Length: 309
Ligand code: F7E
Image (cartoon, rainbow, N blue to C red; front, side, top):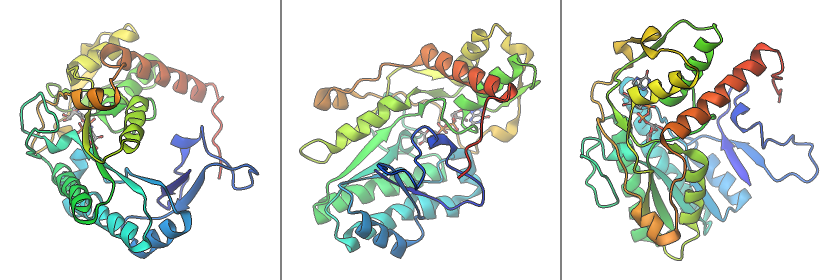
């Protein structure tokens, strides 16, 4: 397996510590390469060297709130970066299958339930860039016969979720408040409804999409709605704390235009390759809170060792 990572002056592979292998490992199965979606020739060279059977395009400026602050950069990476990668595959002449990480954010203002036939109405520069990338994948399928697939994934979470997305921000804060190392949790809009699933199941769904005989587009979702408020309440409840004592509002975390409700219908994925989400709602909240309690405990007791590479 080959992975592409951005160069950073500090270590940026801690979320894959569990599978990372040192370059000296003899029977190595994971190879990481520095690259970037804006480096078109570099992408061509990498693809030519690696000759992948499947390409999973997950790279993006993926934070919706940040996309309002950096609309041009978001368009360049999330949108045009997809054109760069698709063209690189053509230029390298690699007959690979292509997975495009499309997003429920493309549905934006269109009311739930959302499925593969729901019209797009993005509400952010991020959502708009993802719509462009979605149609590009469809276009390369139609124009060049590429095996290009859009996975339209609703929010998928896990203990590895980035700390500034709302689920992880909440579960991490709850663990820290319970341990007495944080006083308050500041959030924006508590009324937004999301369909939160468990990321490992979604990754398997992505893989299954690329194993089909024909390329097509699929929604992955749980179909189970939950408000941000309910997610936070379940997290505080898990550690026996009263949410009202610690939760505060900060308008900084609101968006100029909000996506009020996303609730997906993954019936096509179920009917085609038997995929159905198993983990959602309070189970997902508890799983993430428990992981953050353990991670903090390891950190506070000095058991966490930073792996240098
Ligand atoms: O926000 C509300 C916020 O940033 C969820 C990305 O992976 O999923 C993700 O996008 C909701 C929104 O995720 C805070 O207004 C309240 O309504 O966790 P989020 P997202 O915007 O749904 C989709 C499928 C993607 O494709 C994206 O790449 O929570 N909210 N208070 C807050 N959100 C954040 N981040 N921080 C707050 O303090």
